[in-house]
Length: 175
Image (cartoon, rainbow, N blue to C red; front, side, top):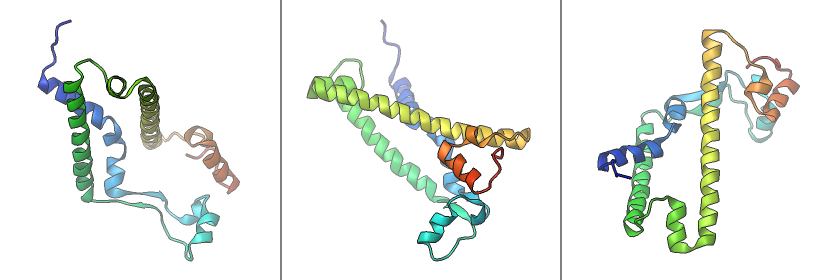
């Protein structure tokens, strides 16, 4: 098979693999913050918060990082650059096509390679779950905003969260 990918193509492929879809999922809420509930009285965790906090906050959520999100992207980019340099070094030392499994098999043995292979499978599974959670959040908000659709709690949340909201007197069909 003829090699058709050049350095530019491989660099773009590596950047796409590193960035993934996570950049689209939480960048906005990371910069601006997120209000989970307009009032603490609407959340199912009221008793828990009152047990360890002396006062009840008016808004439950997380603050945004604002312009400091750029700094976090720079730090993450430097870490990804180091990982890319490690892969470049391994590719030059072991000239076979492969990934972490192949490189660990050639250098550390079969058992470690087997462990790393399963770690890669778990990594991809967790990454796909994170993308699915982010995508479903966008989809629910899009359907609620454009078409005024309400999804049932059991479809939007996990079982424990939905049961907690319903037990606190929340609407079972609200999303």
